[in-house]
Image 1 (cartoon, rainbow, N blue to C red):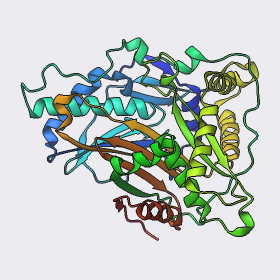
Image 2 (image 1 turned 90 degrees about the horizontal axis):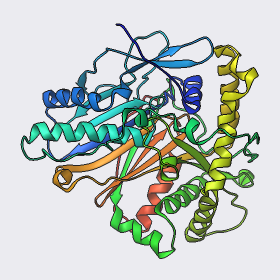
Image 3 (image 1 turned 60 degrees about the vertical axis):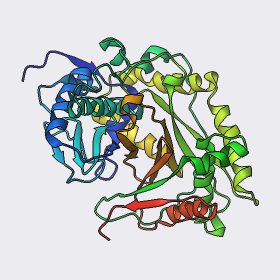
Image 4 (image 1 turned 90 degrees about the vertical axis):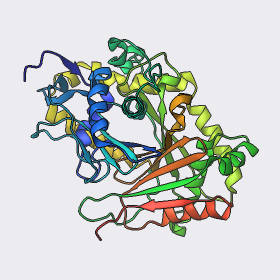
Length: 416
C-alpha cells in the first residue's frame, strides 16, 4: 500500500484515542431499517460506491511520536451479516483495519464507525448515502435524480472545523461542577455493554412537550433525571444529577465537515425538594438554552482548543499526553450521571421515504448513554448500558407507560 496523504486529528478525536477501551470502544452504531429484507450483494456494491463520495472514511489511524494522525488506505470494506457486538472495537494500534464496518440483518443496514473519524451527524450522512445508493440499485430507474449528500467540496468535508472557528486566548479552566450521582452500581462482567431499543410514537409524546412549551430534548432529559432520581438512596439525594448533551455545532457555524464538530453541555439538578416532571422539564429547557448561546459555546470551545497551541504541550511525547488526557477525562466523567444525545429528525427525499421504516443508534460508553432518532411517527431511543442493575431504564419506561405512551422495548442478551 502506498499512502500519499495524511491528516491531522482534531482535539476531540485525540481524547477518544487516549480513552478507547474494551467496554467503551469509542464507536457509534447507526442503523436504517428498510421495509424489506436487505440484498447483501447490492449492499456491497452500494458501500463501494459510497466511499467514492466519502473518501474521508478510507483512512488508517497511525501513532506518531507527538500525536496520532490519519493516512489514506487502500483497504476496501467488506459487507457481512451482523455477527458481532454493537459498537465493536474499530481501532487497535497493533491491527491493520478500517475504522468503520457495514453489516446487515434482515431489513436493517448497520454502520458502526469509530468516533475518531466522525460524529453522529457525519455518520448519519454516510449511512444515508449508502442507503440511497442501495435503493437506486434495488429499484433501477426510479431514483435517478435523487441525492442526499450535501454537495460540499472535499476540502469542506475534511475541514477541522474546531480549528477553523475556535482557538482564541481564553484559558478558562472549564466547569467547576460537583461530582454527580452515578446510578449504575456494579458493572457487567467481561467488559460487556447491554443495548436497549425503546420505540414509541412521536405523536404520543411530542404534544406533552409542546403543552409545557419545552423541546423534546428537554422533556426526555428531565424524564431521564426522574428515572435516575428513583434509584438514589436517601443519603445521596444531596448529589446533583447531571445529564451531558452533545450539541451539533453545525447548527451554529457554517461548517459542512464530516469530521467531528460538536461539544457537550451539562444540565444539572439537585433533588432537594419535590418537583414534578413538567416543572423539571421547564427548568431543564431553560438551563439548556442558557448553555447554547453563541457566546457560551465559543467560550467553552476556545478553552478546549487552546490545548493544541500551548508550546510545552506540543513537544511532550504522545504516551505522556495520553496519560494526562485520561486523567482529566476520568475527572470530567465523574461530573456526569449519563449522556443523552438527540440525533434529530431524519428527513428523506419523498421518493425514498416510503422504502424506509425507521432509524436507530447507539454509542459505546462506560456508564449510560442514550441516543434519540425519529423518522415519521417512530421515535427510537437507543440505550447503551454498562451496569448489571437496569433500574434506571425500567423507571424511564414505566414513566412513559404510565403517561399512556405505547412502548416497544428490545434488549440484547448479556453474560452475568
